Image (cartoon, rainbow, N blue to C red):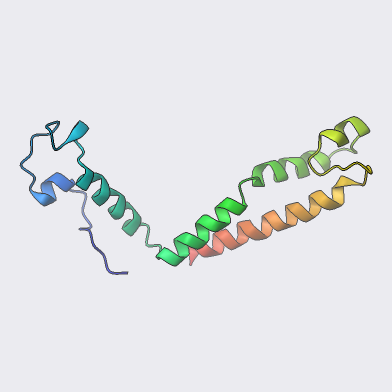
Length: 124
């Protein structure tokens, strides 16, 4: 992707040779809209991620929003046998008291696959 910003640590105001007074009507809190946009774009360009890669990573992150809960449940359930009281509080339990370990294990394996896909996406 062609770079649109200057790869330097100079501030936007120095690069643009802005002559507005910081904090003045064009510069709320020392950061005008142009500076905010420029800094966000520069941050993105420094990541070296292509737009498609970034979209794929964002999609995987959405799918992984419950990953911590799944991993923590797998860790906890692997150390003990669920009692009926604990079973009802488990998101993988059901009315028939079917063993939740099978459902949890499937969710855990899916989480691991998505984490590995995210890692590969970000590493390129």
